[in-house]
Structures are given as structure tokens and as C-alpha cells.
Image (cartoon, rainbow, N blue to C red; front, side, top):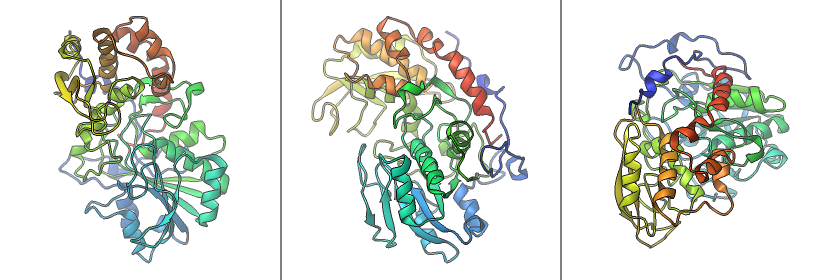
Length: 422
């Protein structure tokens, strides 16, 4: 089977050049983003550019920051600590998402309201809050400008991008200005891939119709949200990176990695996550409670037949190893289960979503105990009933993947208007 490289498939994608944008306007060209290949220059995050310009964008404003442990500088200081110590910024509040500002909570949890011991700043809990309830928090905090700085991982169901969306909606309701500080998409920004959410399946793992792997940075997403989905735009400014290339993986950025959540320990986890997180919608373990979440998948009763069936698909850039593991928490806690470990051999060719679909199909065919979660969570993750019903009907990988191509093409056309890097 011949697999064209993903780089070749994406070479024709039309993208815009970088700018700091207000609202959904098309970006202008900035000279420092017409850059030579590294090592000709060093990537600078949105925060690094904001700081280098003396925080002029925040001058005279009472500022609140939506962030988590990933909001760090190159020397691994947290931006809240840095700004709190700088007289040029009037930082008055912090807003913590799922897992919390300092990252003490597991999946599905947060830290609640408290005063940060390091800075004395009030920390407000945004998790599971949206609309007017979240707008009331922004009002109570007495901020003028809400700043967002969180590392994303590139998948629609990773909830921080919907924290971004909810905070933008709430900032508009509360009459606040909104600033997004950009960071890299760790699995590249080459293209959008996977099924597009159907609006009737909107949840906190997908508010709006974007593809499963969006191929955008948080600043680009903010512009997309403002231009396409908010009923009225929020006063939005984005501070883009300089020196970032769309085809770049995170380990090429020169930036330190901080786990955005407890089960996203490495950039390699992010590489497979957009596909293997689909196993959250099944009765199999997705590897939570192991040192390789989303790379280890399994359940009691699975043996080598699954790995053999998955390898027989000859999926590009990936091999599957028969594996046994004992989760310390989550599904099958304390029990030894069998399954596979996903080994990405060529990340340029690897397609995480096609791989995830192939693994679902072969798991169902090779293990009689396979079942979807009773709440059909898989439909929330994929964005419709299509994937589940096609797999149940016996469809193969090509047929399932082919089923979303028309909707994906339409989303790619919309997405292209908001891309900010060459």
C-alpha cells in the first residue's frame, strides 16, 4: 500500500502571514515572519513579544490572566509570577481552567477559588462555567482586559480551546477586552484533519463545528471563533509568535514542555492524542494511570490478536506492539490488561485520526468484549453518530475516513481565512 506523505498532501494549502489582529480581519504581512529556516532565528512566544514591547498592549489596564502551568517563560518562570513582579503591569486576578491554575487537579476537576500563596492574587475558577455565570466572575474581578495564555495540543476535544471560547463569550458579555498570547501547535499546523463536529453534539469537548485535529494555534482559533461563531465579536487582540513554522513539531521549537494536563506528559503524547483519545468512548483503557497515556490501550481479555490485526492494516508511520499493563487509576485500576502500545516510527507520515479509527475497527473485530460507552460518548468525541454507526456496520478504515471528507473540505476553506503563519 502506498502512503503519500502528509507533508506532500499539505504543501498546496494556502495560508496567510502573521500579524497581531483585532477581531476577524485578515492578517497583514509582518516582515519578521518571512523567516529563514532555523537556526536563522529563535522562536518567540506571544508572551515574549508582549514583554519585549514593555507590555504596551496592557498599559493602563487592570489585567486578569486565564492560564495554567503551561504559561511559562523560556526559563520556566510562570508568566503570572513575572508580570506580578513588574510595575509595568497592573495584574489583579488569575482565572484557572480544568486542572487549575497551578495544575493540582486531575481530569474533570479544578482548584476552586483561592488566593495564590506566591503572589497573593485572587484565583477564580472557570471550569464548567460559561455564559453569564463566567461573565459575572470577570465583572467581580474588576479587570478591564482578560489575557489568555495556555498551551494547546491540537485536538478539538482538548478542553482548553473551549475555555478560550467560553472566556471570549463571557468577556463580550461583561464588556471586557480580550488578548490572546500565542504558543505553538505541538503537532504542527499543517492541515485540519478528521470529522467535523455537528452542532447538535456540542459539549465542552467541542462547542462549535471544527475538525477533530484543527491544525491551528490558539490565536488563530480565537480569530476563527470571533469571526465565525460568536454572535457578536469580542474586542480581540492576538499577540502572535515570531519564528514559528507551520510544519514544526514541538521539539523543534526550542521551548520547554510543561504537561498541559496530568495525562499529557510529553509532546509524543500529543502526537497520538487526536486519534487514541477516541478510546475514552469505549470500554477499553486509553492508558490513563500509566506512564504512557494514549499510547497504551487495552482491556481484560485482549491478547496478541489485536496487535496483529492493527499491524495488518499497514498504517503509515506507525507500528503496534502487543503490550500488557496495570493502570494505577481510571479504567481497570489495579488490574493487568492486554492490548497494544502505539509506536510512531515516522511522524511526518503518521495520521493520528486514521490510526485511531483503524484501532477502533480492529479492537471491535478481534475482541468479543468490545463495547461503546453506554452514553455514546464516542459521538461527542467524533462530533456525530457517523463514526460509531459506520464501524458498527462493518465499514473499513477508508470508508469511515471517506465519510467526513466533504465536511472537512468545507471547514478547511473557512479555516484558511484565519491562518496567521506561512
